[in-house]
Amino acid sequence: MTPISGLLGLCSRAGQITLGTDMVIQEIRSGRAGLVLLDEGASQGTKKKISDACAYRSVPLHRMPEGEIDRACGKDGRMAAAVRPGKLCQQMILLLSQPGEAGNHE
Image 1 (cartoon, one colour):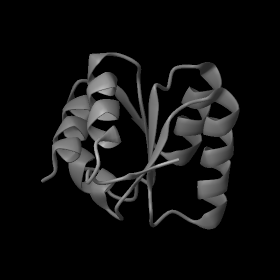
Image 2 (cartoon, rainbow, N blue to C red):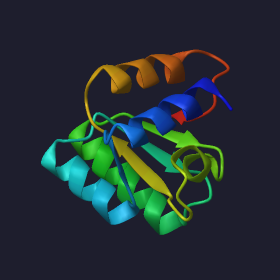
Image 3 (spheres, one colour):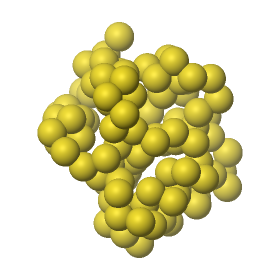
């Protein structure tokens, strides 16, 4: 398990994360997303919708290896996750900005 997976699981247990494409887009539009994580296995349409929403609202977007969001949160079939702003979100952004950490920044 990578450090980012551990923090993602912690965010899930703390209720600081929203899962699912439609709910994530809602969180981005409402300003309640401090960071968005997107599974590499998501469809092209899903990637475009979330990428466009993040770019428009200036929300950091990171791509995660396929299945990592599922494993970290313990829920199958989740392609996107929005993390609420706060200390856990800041720590995740810090980890993801370090060279060699899983996930690609957009």
